[in-house]
Length: 270
Picture (cartoon, rainbow, N blue to C red):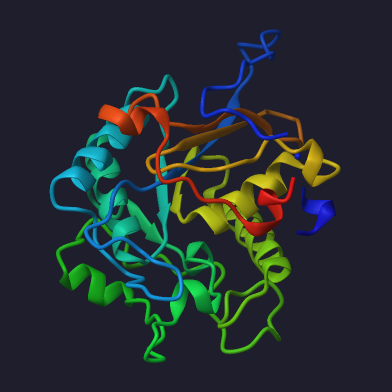
């Protein structure tokens, strides 16, 4: 992991907000979401890598996530999503809970799964093929903003620094996450945003925003299904504050306790 992007494992409970001095100041919010249970469990080096949500449990999880975000004192204004099926499924549920159904999902290549062989290549050599926006719209994801152009599109090689490409090292994923986060924030222009992605990309983005001096000092840790993370930034400040990490208190049943966790390799070595 890039030490410069990096901070002790936290629980899946909200972190205490020590910032009580300027409630009248405008804050910007970033919510990171991991989807719920998928129809086909993803097995590393086996697949499948682009499953929809489970038609019962997965949708129940997605609805719980969506209601959680809609009930926040400051809910997101716009949703940026990976193009993979489980992420767009979840994003669709979120925008409906927010009452935003037209041109409300921005499909962003920079949020795609970590493009490493163990998460993208099946035993027969078949490689993950992300769907286009038009293909997703044709699948009934009509909430997608078809005018939105990805701010960090997939490249065929790493000559475009920070662009997602097959295949990425963990160190390169950190660079991709930083570039994607910077460009999304610039595009969002101060709006409160929700990012629906995958643990590797979301953890890498969280490490960048957190800005810890080292992995050992980081609060970024295992991320369970349905976990919601929240960063805030006061108007006029450059730094982001981690206020909640991988919280699953909104999830039904045993998933409320945080199940099916995943972490980047660099974070498992802390």
